[in-house]
Length: 255
Image (tube, rainbow, N blue to C red):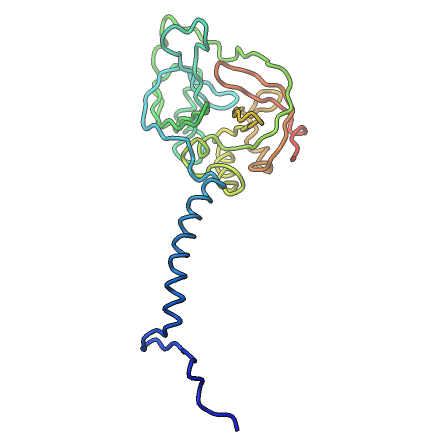
């Protein structure tokens, strides 16, 4: 007849009794491994998903320049100093303070010189101003700007990712790839300029504002392509330090 007594080495844990010796030995091995694994996970994962966004929020600033509306609202600012042999103007993309385009009160000033107040966010060559206000001012007497004077650099077939120009420069982390898709779609559909990030095999990164062949914004027409690797074929136009990729949506293809 089998014995009804439990085995002598059966260390059954009861919460009001001391932990059995085998439990303590297991925890003494497991807890250091858990801590080490957590540290390694925190070091490796951000590198994979780019959680440490290299962009930065530069804080509140005031800039004076010409407010332009096409293909998206942006501010053309004369560069200081001798710019005879360089690009004479900087162009800053504009967004609202949230996931939107600039407020109607700011957009109403398109075509005028303004003193614009907002927060600059930048990453590499990409800068956007979260605009809060724009006050009309008199234009400087010695500056002439033709906002439509662009230079065609030719037709290109470029591969990259569509991003929103506010989160990617540094407002959100990681600000790109599929982990950021929903946020990017919300920003772009709300009027934040859509940009195309192209990263070649030489580790060069370029950003292109997206427009159709007529030079109009495409925000609400490219939402299905956000965060996917895609190829776009179109004409690259240069406006000072801003590059615009003008292409019909029929050329957008996933790769």
